[in-house]
Amino acid sequence: MKKFKKTLCLLLAAFTMITMGNVNAFADTTNQSEMMENSVLQDEAKGSVRYYGTVNNLKQTKATSNSVTLTWDDSNSASTSWTVEYVIGYNGSTMSSGSTIVTSKTVTISGLVQNSYVAVYVLPNTETSTYNYAYYGYAMTTPSAINKLALVDHFGFSSSSKYKARIGWTVDSDASYLSYGCADGSSNYGYIIQVYNYKGKKIKTYYSTYARTYYELACTKPGTGYKIVVTPYFKSNGITFKGASKTLFAQSQAKDTSSKSGLKKGSFIVKWKKVKNAKSYTVYCAKSSSYVSDTSTLNWKKVKTTKKTSYKVTKVAKKSVNTKKYYYYYKVIVNGKIKGSKKAVKSLGTIGGYVHTY
Image (spheres, rainbow, N blue to C red):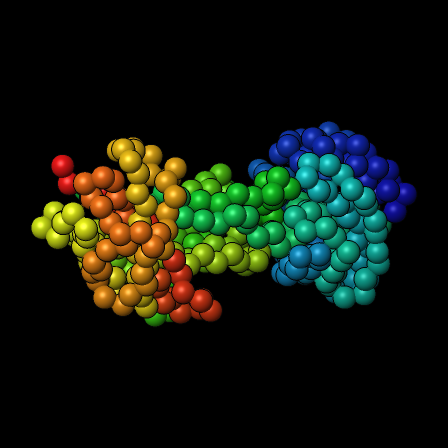
């Protein structure tokens, strides 16, 4: 093992280069002609395997938030124990290294930090040459959940348009090494986005690349609600490893159908189109002495929660409506029922414009 230990020390010095995908960083520190004998060399260091002896089929088979498990085969039936050397990386830096001897063809390395990755080297203890080992770079823990999953912009109706559900999220910086666990190509890591209707039936699954943290869900339609689940994942040797999921309940806005026909000096009628999964609707109003373009600056007051699809407004903030003196703005919040949510899911408000008599 003396020569192998020397090789490992040289590897540790070159570890930063390997994390950047430099395959030659390892080969340059050893006798390349001897290492290439009876070997299978893949192009990528990340998630790839190199064989230089009797150990073969080395692969990651399990991952948790703080451990990785690998297994292998050995064509030499005389092998009864194996030395496993490993180097642990996190967020682009080497954290630690270690070794262990196992008597079965599997090893679990635990006590890891989530989003860390491990380069693993397996050498049969029956080998006389320390170059006859297998190398796996890298096994990875399950990735951490995304942050701040939310609707982006409108979902539903505006004055003249319809909008599908569009979602966005953020991720921790250490999750950017998700690709390190992937042995099945660059397209096999990122996010799984599952969309369910308000009754809980799955209607679509999307796969988003890691670099993309925004997604328009083409399967969604205004006028109803959805449950959306986003899960980070990577795929290695045909096995999909998933991190913790984040769930968003998305409720569509209602379509405003109000008209001037219900407008009087002392009242006005707000109308909207029925939403499939609505439990109720809440009408909010605000008034201003002059026209305003930015309604977010107004002092909105709750007027009424109703199960109907219209409401006659006669008072705002306990004061009688006077459409000649004031401009009145209104919006309707949908209180939707979506399976899996313990409480009503509120939509973004439907801004219906304003009412005023001249």
